[in-house]
Image (cartoon, helix red, strand yellow):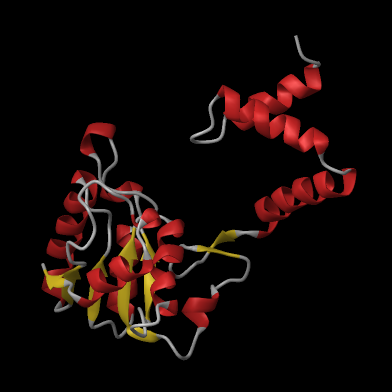
Length: 203
């Protein structure tokens, strides 16, 4: 038996992805052992993130300003759009810019906020494909890089978007197979991502 507030804290931790009962208990006891100021800082940072972060109206990545810093930047290549599945993939791709052997990715992004998955009932209207087409039709985009994850859903989505964009006269490329099949961009290292970008192929 544990005190109810502690049990409730454990339950909240268990709701997080990848957190089992033992880890949830360890985190809960750790929070209890914090100084009150640190615990409040943690709670306030969670509330601030929920209150202040939203989706960019241009690329649909997470931002505390609208449009986001990448979409506003005058130094980025706005002729190139890298299409990814989730906002965390933008952070993964941005790590290539800090890699010592190359300049990394210099273009902009478009976050689909998911992938096509007919078995789960997720179709083109459920992710940000329409918004991508609108960006291309109203802008001066020359290349779209499909950087969806190298799994079944990612490949299906990349192929669908490529077929949709080809009639618009846009070059559509796919990041190279420097990424293991079935893996996520989030966990790839900077050099692998940089090489995958460098060796992208047309689709």
